[in-house]
Image (cartoon, rainbow, N blue to C red; front, side, top):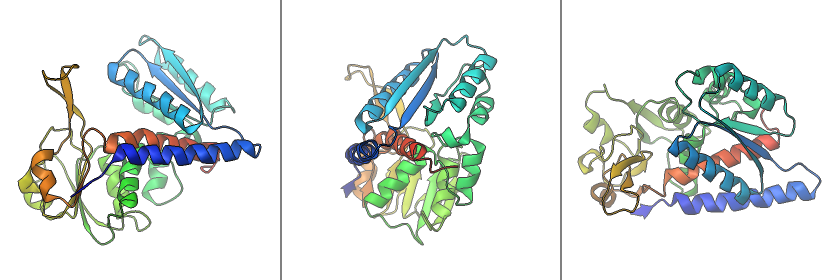
Length: 291
């Protein structure tokens, strides 16, 4: 059984990015600049943004953090987005989700210039990705693709089963795994209302779990020799930890791992790749590859 090490893979990719950035700067080019907009004081969002700033440092990027209280109005936030769209020094930017309830996340996402949308959430990027045109691909699906490629896990002609149909993971993952240039696989998408979930999962050569249900993928759902990619990260109480909780994936790791040819752990699997892929998208934005 191969443990797919997302942390080590992400570190290697960030080192590659830094090397390329230094070559760009040495030849007179511009250092890529990522801006992040953080509204309010959500604990998870604070952690994510802090990690993104640290990743920018590791990649040799310039980074800017714009913080606002959660009473900012929708119009004010949209004005911030317009300013970032128009700022030639900013190559890409993200508006950290979730946003306060009085602000329409979709309205904010659609206001972002798709050429600076390094999260890959804008409908233009989603649509271009779906038909195989150059686009910013959202970070988690791109991270999963990259892990499969770097660990030489074959997908062409294989059966890939995706548990979950979210706009951020399930849907784009299905699109990418179907496309000849990426997964070239036969894809089944399962969700909470699907029938015969266990039987469908047992047919998977590659099983991607992204439902947000801790330890819901059990050993009897996995075909011997399958590759299992666990996207889930749920905090579950754990009195033995200093924090009082631990991160639990969607997969019952201890039971499932012995059946697999390869599996991602939680933490240390898909998670580190997500921020790393945001850095890769920022490099692409700095090089003006999406236009």
